[in-house]
Length: 164
Image 1 (cartoon, rainbow, N blue to C red):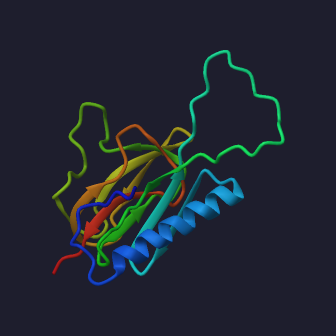
Image 2 (tube, rainbow, N blue to C red; image 1 turned 90 degrees about the vertical axis):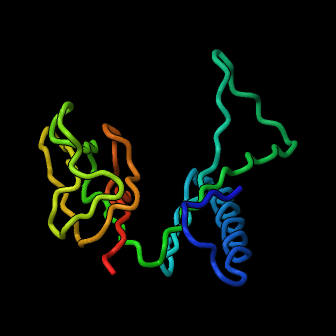
């Protein structure tokens, strides 16, 4: 099942190509034993995550048998961003904070207009607070990370719509 961010419907057979690409990525992830795979091309980002079955408490691993075990059906998440959207990514590993203090107002909210170089958030890494600045001017379309959540290098944090 594909899940889309709010954007205009693609023209032509783009939906069919997106579904086919999603199926291929799910097959590759299953074949290679990957839990997640992400691809970006021509402004379209597609991420596939395999769902994991929760283990029962106190359960032991089943003995290996010669019968094939059915693969876990992958849970598919497709993030389709507008081709003009600018993605602000995490420049480091750390903890994402939207404000300078727990009681302070966030640096930006969805819908805010930002300037190039404006502070968008803070990433705490090794007890240092690193201010993350906007790499372009525009409107904040989506904040992709929750306050206080860990982030990885290159993880998308914000989607910006450039000025017209």
